[in-house]
Length: 168
Image 1 (cartoon, rainbow, N blue to C red):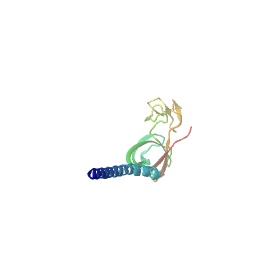
Image 2: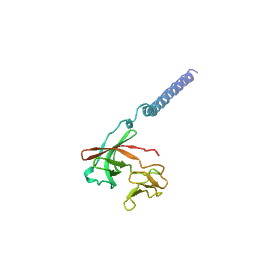
Image 3: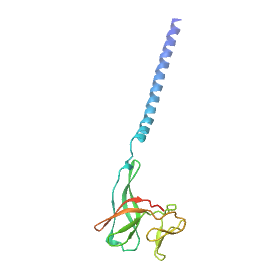
Image 4: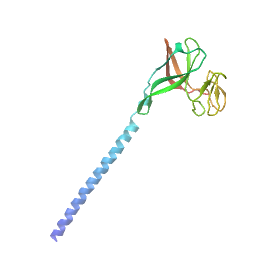
């Protein structure tokens, strides 16, 4: 009888050991999941930072009253990622010191539009929305004028800031 008592005692010790190991592993796995989740919920993303102005074009190369698509590089923050990407804007030089820059997507469904010089308007090929040189809707299903970028002229440089969504 005494030997069976020892075996039960050893089995209990083994069971306790495995129980501690399993609970310890579950704690480690829980921590591995909970710490990144807590960091995601508690820490502010980088998108809270303002990135400022981007040098987009030389305004002496732009003709007054003629829209031109300008390609430039910008740094964009997407949550926790900082992306350096090539993007475009439709730029209209209104006079010697003023420039308007439109975002490249139609306000209907975001399709890329282009300038139709013969018709003197921007045309979105997806659903035939049209916009005047000032960005106002002249036809089609677009619900509002083209969205604009904040612009600033510094000497000969055109600086583009963030986009502003215009209301109807």
